Length: 287
Image (tube, rainbow, N blue to C red; front, side, top):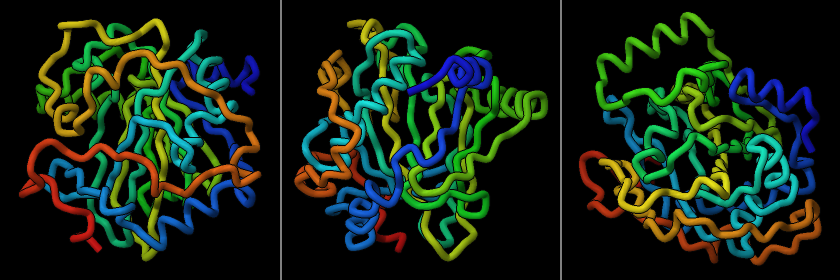
């Protein structure tokens, strides 16, 4: 799927954007239709808060079944492209859908994914995430923002908040900022150390994205090497769900041929461990 130039761009910038990766009209409408009929996604959407305490809806899963959202991370072009970037076989880490409802003021604060996953015991930054635009993503509705080349910094200390913010400002001023504006069906591949975030949604339309993350097969979490990953604990993903599990790849036309059982009705989602209170509110309360 990827040519040498695209792989070099990824290695240089820490991300690449591929347009109309999902041949939009044939593949993604059933998922978007199902979400619009049930934006709570069977009641599994909850609010992940930003530094200001404002929540945005999110739902997470690790098991890949025969629903659309279980098939998408197993589609051959997804897996093959990821393995081309990693240079070795990969396996599914987890997937999630994130929503910016109309007028949602919540931000995704600047972060590196590896900061959390390192605390899961992962030894090397050999993870890739694919962000899929299920609805158009624009600067106005809170599209993904990336700092190109920031994956070369290495893992930053997110716990020292003051120092982290200063470093982020310096890195952004030095390397610049990219707004990943995408049409439905476009995708962005980004490195687990690439700084990313997003702003609020100032429009009257929603912004729905699906993110599928993969780990290199050689990079399973080490036993007894976990750190104080409070976010990971909250997400309720067990150590058993982080070990290598071969990906049963599906043909690229599996969605076009409508071989799915449903959009998301049969997927077991991960519900938070802690009680949803001040910090985490049901997304239903946002609408």
